[in-house]
Image (cartoon, rainbow, N blue to C red; front, side, top):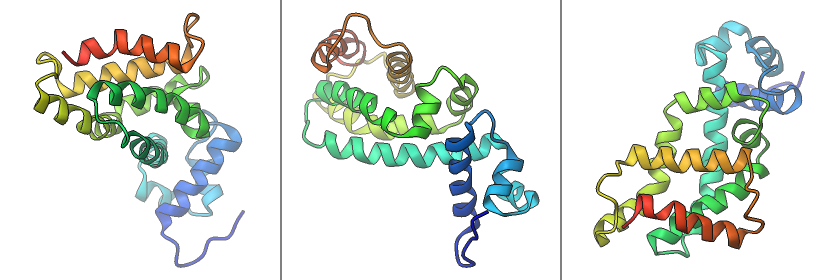
Length: 194
């Protein structure tokens, strides 16, 4: 087991160990015992910070999503049209998620639907979605083009479900990013914007 520096935060050690376990053995095969062993902490210490294996998973995925969202938001700064931000944001997410093995395992793998369900039932999807879409929704509201019937949580769910669908079951008809961009403009934008 790797030794841990005395000054390092126990949560940092635990989450780094959990990430290593997920990557080595898979999310499904990683339990509290494996994380505690990899982190070189007592299980009681692990439970003090994270009461369940789902809590550990949510914390690790949250960090991965924060890193991905930082990249996506930085790249989206060049767009100012709300429709382009929605479509390009989804395209960027479709590119970024597979580059991150933990996010790939949760959102784009057929193997671990349980992990996807745990993340869906946590509040991080809504938090990240609302933050990511805030710079879409606010300008759209100011321009008067946001659909009145679309509540933020519905918008987040619609975009999330579209993303999961495209990650887990790629289209038979769109072969390029340009074709996917056209499809998203035609199908996603009218639901969200006027």
